[in-house]
Image (cartoon, rainbow, N blue to C red; front, side, top):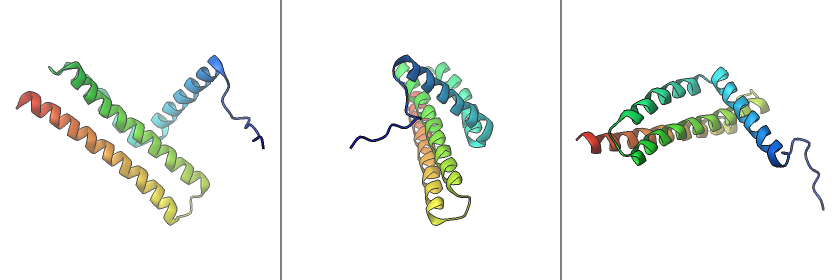
Length: 128
């Protein structure tokens, strides 16, 4: 049996790439406008990335320092998407909604802990 194709299904070729970029920028704009945690993390990312680029460490270590910060932003975006979907379904309090939001929050926490550990190890190895 052939499944019907959604009208929202992506296009082919360059149009698909153009649409994907447009949706991605829309998502970043929405995150900046509506998500306080994302704005905070982006400010931290901006300062920390500049510091990482100025540190006297290898290029690979700079990549690791900046990469874990980007990972925090990625996980925050996914967490915000989960929260938006849960709120779209219902604003009523429900144990499964709480679980979904708590699990997203836990993912952000783990990404932040990984970032802190990475920065600690790189800085400790360089300066002590």
